[in-house]
Length: 159
View 1: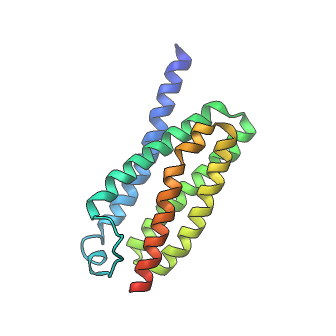
View 2: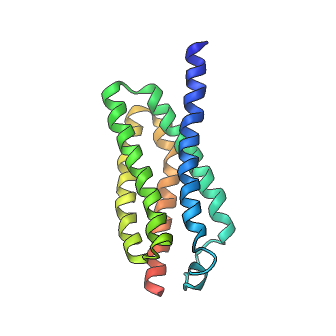
């Protein structure tokens, strides 16, 4: 019973952590999404503003479950390496909001996305080695990050 409670509590904790990072990024985004961002020229494949929040919430939810799976299934050394990679990509994800929306630096945000994209690839690889479901749950995040990079670069070129 105690182990089951620990598993449920840690699952909630990982999801809450990821959603908290989402909330911080969202707060930074709201600072300029309704003025500066609206004035930018955007490519035709830009999704409507309302689509971003549900997509990110689903992605962060999946990221939390993925991290939880690794936390419970990995040995200490492998867990430490995988969770360090996870924390790094999570921090890079948050940093992008500060760079793009906070600093309004489209070019630097695109460069940062390359680093984030690489960190996501490493995290997927490490998670996949521990648990295929954990790695697979991050694939939509990888796809969205790739899409975000194309969108970011397009906005940079257009502006």
